[in-house]
Amino acid sequence: MFFEAAIIFFTARYLRKVLYASPKLAEWDNRLRLAWIAGLVLLGIGIVFPVLEHVARWTAFALIFALILVIHKNEEFRPARWVIYAVDPYLIVAANFEIVDSLNVKWLDHLREYKDPAITFSIIWMGAMYFVSRRQRKALDKERSIRLAEEAQNKIIEAKKNELEYMVAERTAELTKQKEELQLALSDLKATQVQLIQQEKMASLGELTAGIAHEIQNPLNFVNNFSELSMELAQELKDEVERPEIDKSLVVKLVTDLTHNQQKINHHGKRADGIVKGMLQHSRTSGGKKEPVDINALADEYLRLSYHGLRAKDKIFNATLQTKFDPAIGKINVVPQDMGRVLLNLFNNAFYSVSQKKRSVGDGYTPTVSVTTQRAGNKIEIHIKDNGVGIDDKILDKIFQPFFTTKPTGQGTGLGLSLSYDIIKAHGGELSVTSKENEGAEFVVTL
Image (cartoon, rainbow, N blue to C red; front, side):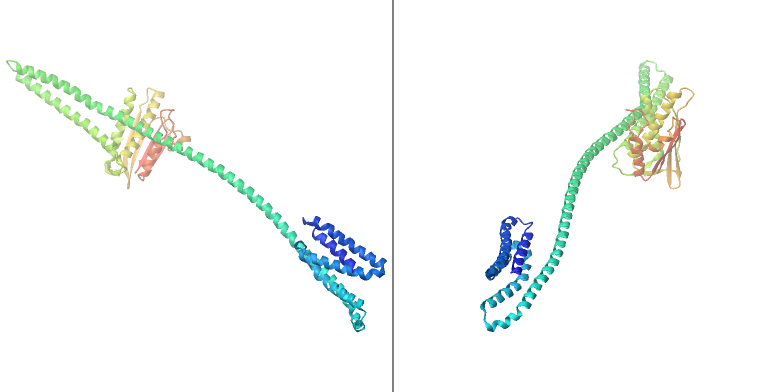
């Protein structure tokens, strides 16, 4: 009876342990506690009342069978199913020998010899199954612990991943916003740059127009003056012809003077026409196409246009113009409009520099701007030199940068030299500068 009570006690306690973390523990706890108590009661009955031992044992067998049935049919007791295989041999052996003992038949006496070995083997089997299941349970617990640790680690990783994804999304949104702001700022900057470039072009056009107007003024003045004189001579000639007695010598003299005046008018008219045609040729829209151009003539014309443009603004300004053109250069392929803009810009800067120095130095200083062309191997060089204020060494390497200017606010956009540099680069050439402060500067265009 001891083993049956022990089996009931152990099984009930083990099943409670299996259900420790299950939500069904409360449902089964009282029942298992009653089974545990019933085992103790049956053990007490068997000890106190030996007469009832046989009944107590069969009641114990029935209770054990009920526990086995509960384990078998309920999924929550799956981890305890090894108990079925451990207890079944003892239950079968003990119950069968209990029947044999109760029948008291002589021909079954020889079976009683196997009772103790069979009982002993079933008990050893239960012990072996317990240790095997315990070992398996430890392995499963270890595996479960590892799995739980991995799940916990995965949860941490997932949380970190979600946090990083949120941070990345937040940072991406921030960068996207910054990108949009930068694109907007870049668009505004490009629009401003286009406006400034247009302003620079218009300023160059204004200076060019002023130079043309001043340059063409001289031949027009001559045409006007000689035409007035011709009108007076023609009137004198008419009066002389209407007299009764004509002074032939006076008529000849008047006709000679009139012819001379007409020649002067024709000469200066052609001069004005040449200026207009030349400027129209150089300033027309070329579409970026290169064509053969006489660099010497181009440099000479824009030198004088730049000078007269400044003279139109400052009537008292005077400067010495020096030219030294190499006739061996001939014509080279350039875009006339673009090259004219470069030369005009360089001449304007030179005249601005000498005019600034003239204002500060005063008498005793002669503003001088010179232009020299020369062939150097398979290249040609245009040297534009002045004896003006020069350029400080600290800013010499910045003068070709866009929007950098040494002129006062409102007098320069800082794009003239930058555009000139880009134009020369587009022609496959170079634009360089050397300068000494208060002694002047020299720009060299190499093509």
